[in-house]
Length: 154
Image: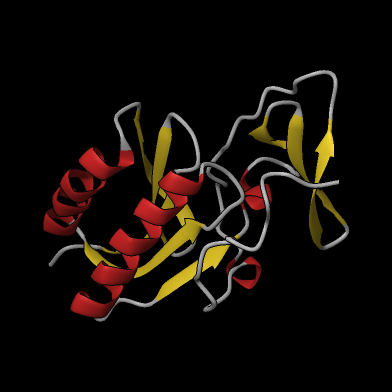
């Protein structure tokens, strides 16, 4: 009988990260520089042949709007078709609340619980990381992408 696991997807920038979690602990990680539209179906198929997938989690933004859309449509479809619950959280959970590139010198920043855009002169290097232990309380069943965040702001 295959292990029961949860999958976490971070597709907001390259490389794409997918974490396999058993009992909230990271047991396996996949990293890919391919386009999410090309690689997500392949990686999901490989993982679903190896594991019993119980829950899906993903970073729903901010970040590349196209990458967010692709991940959301793919994961929402899998969730509906396979009856696997889908959860989301914002990308700041995966990068220690560091600024995330928006456009030009504008970056998304999280101040308290509010996400805004802010002009930054120095460009911080944004690295997303899968946590060693998944904190379920950081995720929501409201999984729609963070489209309400404009790329142009104050």
